[in-house]
Image: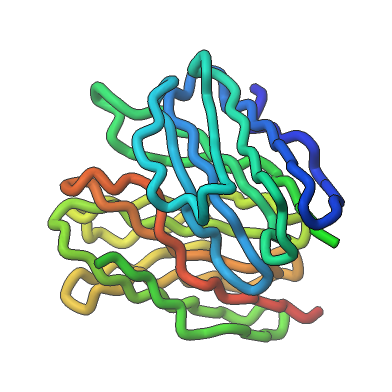
Length: 117
Length: 116
């Protein structure tokens, strides 16, 4: 059974560069979530998808952040013109929702640690 | 507004001691889920338990037990006979259902250190 995977696991970039992260959810899961976790804090919700539809994006931190899930399978999170304050762990989670499944049990990937120099 | 408070930032116990991690939540929804996740040093969040707002029965799973009390808006987690492998950061989280706010709202976490 394959869990949630994320790529890359670590990314170091210079301020002003664009970065893109990928998340592959558990195959039968229709919901995919992105969170950000900074040191000493709990994960903070950014956005989520049900299949290919982005249901909530108002929590994205700025217009430099965008996410896609074009075919309802994997998703990408892009940060444009990175700033030092973007340094954090970016976590992806997936869940199965709809029908009789209302549990919203989310399974997390290992995260992508971003360092902006 | 949804909020989860974990007042204990760090706890240290000696192996085999029991330890309780506190979680207090705020929500206006009548239907919601509460969760506990473990984040070991490797960094990956591991799901431990989900409890829905209609079920106030306490739950036990091995050395772990959870006490859900709606009257005090608390969902506390107890580890019995702690072990070194229990050392991790533990997060309590809330997900509202009525309002459709299914994304998780996390507390700041409690770092547990179990000393041999």
